[in-house]
Length: 72
Image (cartoon, rainbow, N blue to C red; front, side):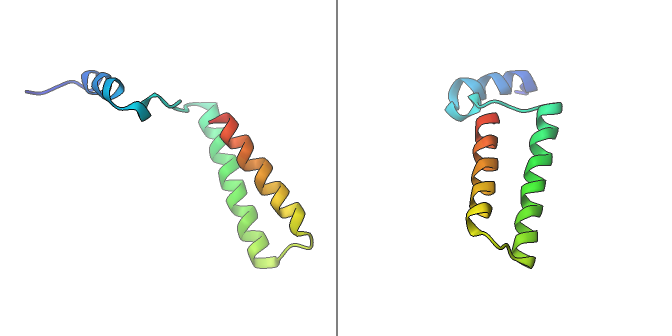
């Protein structure tokens, strides 16, 4: 009773509503990875050294996160 990976993927797509999300691969996955690592670095930098303007920090965070939501 062994099923191939393709059969398993087909069954998952059939019964799991969350499996229809877009899966990133290639350059898109690399871009999203670089942006998320950069955002993490930005947060660590501002947590360690501070930021003069809180509104700028919030605007940068919001714009990057909303951009990632749009891409993914």
